Image (tube, rainbow, N blue to C red; front, side, top):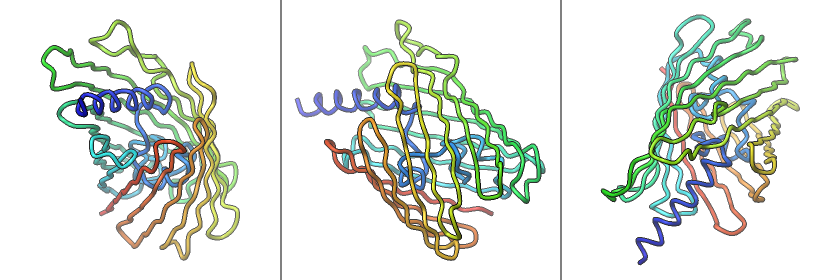
Length: 278
């Protein structure tokens, strides 16, 4: 009975993410700490969270992430990602994410490409990106038909000023149905956000997300960086009202980020992400 209840809980929570949160939660703990905002951020985790942010990656790198929803072992997201510059103006990214257990699991594999139409060293210009996603959902029940889908996401970023970035992203715009269902599909999701470096060390970001069925979700976060090495972050998001916080450490070729998101009813979700650039 306990196992069955847990499976139902996994399915319900997973379905909520698919329908309202852009298919999967953030891979990067930095984004989670900033309330889940990612549309106007640029980092290694962009291969999974915000494809267009890949355009600013100038060195190859790999990373790992683990997220345990509501402190439940059966609701753990494990991700690995990589980014490789392929030209003077572009980069490619690969991501794989696994959620759940053998009894119930979801998987996502992604291939992304982004390019910057401007000066990459100065980070100026307009960046464009596209990502293709393969989604899988299955259980250990032989009578259950696995569900699959291939969809895509696209986005752009522009910098009206050196310290100001505006980003837009659309996920699953074709509303692709899941194979193995009677036309069930994840909604198309749209994100519009901006980030601004208020002063030396301080970065603020705000983002609005809207799908085809639910009320808009507002996300906002603040980051303080000391000597571009130690970082403190906090954020909020609506629908439902969650708050988040986190820490980060960056040193030359690698960075480590910790975050926690607190749901008003279900409790805390901790997350750790690490990346290394060659």
